[in-house]
Amino acid sequence: MNTIFTRRSIRRFENKPVEQEKLDRIVRAGMQAPSAHNRQPWEFLVITDEEAKQAAGKMTPYSGMAAHAGAVIIVLMNKKTGDFENNLFIQQDLGACTENILLQIAEEGLGGCWIGTYPNADNVRNVKEYFKLPDYIEPFSIIALGYSPDENRFIDRYKPEKVHYNKWE
Image 1 (cartoon, rainbow, N blue to C red):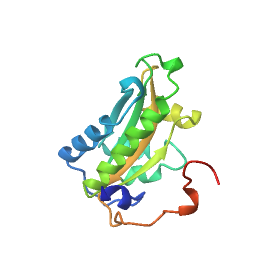
Image 2 (cartoon, rainbow, N blue to C red; image 1 turned 90 degrees about the vertical axis):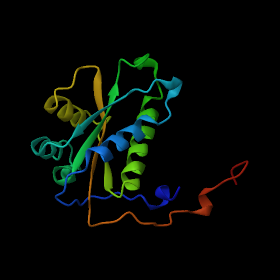
Image 3 (cartoon, one colour; image 1 turned 90 degrees about the horizontal axis):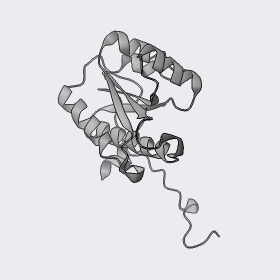
Image 4 (cartoon, rainbow, N blue to C red; image 1 turned 180 degrees about the horizontal axis):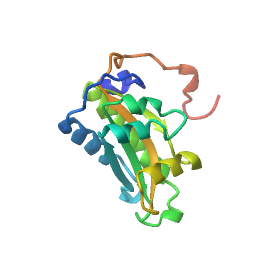
């Protein structure tokens, strides 16, 4: 799976929309993520509207690139999915979902960047208020994506000193 090794955080985008077929495959990839007890606690807000992308670019201190992206996907946490209060793994579920989306973005020949949102209260509030999300929906991550002059390329991050077998030594 070469995409794992070549995916990068891409923050510059061309003024070009992302095709609906690609957006569909990207969201489908997110839904293929593993989740604890198969709860699949995700929902998605796909943004292609220019005004909404501009607003997404102001949601967090680090989301400015979303204003220039071809599309933005907000991965949402549905708190009605199972026993939310005791679902200790929901952040892992949504992290896996977000990573699947990023890998499919790269597979589609696009660039993308994960913008952390949850659990920062200000970021969460900004997204919830602007997009009028119901109480049981929390924004987990914002993903800016699109065509870019920058390319996904391999950078070797392997460090053998961080790998331990059978016991810590």
